[in-house]
Length: 322
Ligand SMILES: NC(=O)c1ccc[n+]([C@@H]2O[C@H](COP(=O)([O-])OP(=O)(O)OC[C@H]3O[C@@H](n4cnc5c(N)ncnc54)[C@H](OP(=O)(O)O)[C@@H]3O)[C@@H](O)[C@H]2O)c1
Image (cartoon, rainbow, N blue to C red; front, side, top):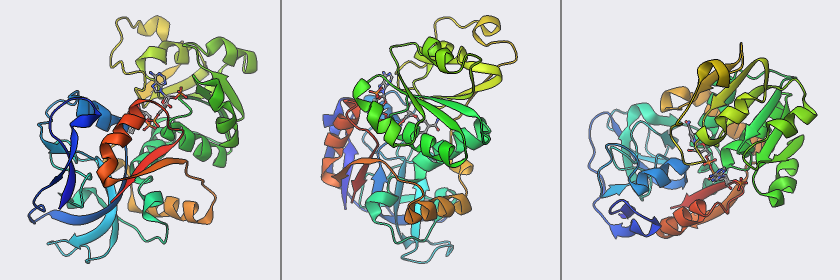
């Protein structure tokens, strides 16, 4: 089979198209004919050698959608549409950047849909992350105010749509003034251009602060995001777009406002349910959710797709079809 193999840690050109053996069947694992997959920021970190315990060469890809080719457990019939996410996929065992992938049964989610594979490929990890962050971590409610820091990312764009559908007011940020129109068209009520700090501009709109903040830029802007919440407001750090994993100084009684809440979301396959996934796919089919897919690449172009993501040119999800 053809696979995009990351031969060693490094720049995007370490991903090379190769002919490799199809994975061998084993009990408890499902062989999937991959049809598409979304590209994820964490895969850039893994490729650069920043994911602990990953040994190269490795077929990366923490998610995919496709058709069951063989399930020795008999749980799924050949041809069932499925998604697979996380659980070590593309890190500790070979993942979705290939014509076939063999994954543990517990990370496989069946669904039925007539949507094209490039659209389906955008969904699993993005939906799991957004739904988990908004509902499980932030516990968003209608009429609340939500600041999305890193609003032009694919996660940020979908978060805005799901929050708007639930009746929240959304303020999205981008560093790039050219993206303001796109964020407004995506449903944001306000856009703030992030020059490293947004709390002063935000307080001009909401002097008491917002109820919830979805922090996707990470440690670089976290202290400023904590300044944006109202009494008993919550910040959830889900992303690390700013590329910094830790902070040199953090003073809990000082940086977190009194009665404010700080949490993180690190989604896993167990955070997704097959019912929620199917429900979301149907919302996309009906057009009540408009997925922002920026580019669709072929399997032979995974290296280019990594490069494109790294250059921050995308205004939505990057998908690869197989
Ligand atoms: N916790 C979890 O379970 C989980 C799961 C999936 C993803 N994530 C994380 O969620 C975040 C978003 O992922 P994604 O795939 O949606 O990203 P993405 O679509 O690739 O985001 C791209 C955008 O991020 C912004 N950005 C890039 N570098 C930045 C920097 N240094 N400072 C501030 N903004 C920067 C840029 O927007 P502007 O130029 O418009 O500012 C860029 O266009 C990532 O950090 C990812 O690792 C977390």
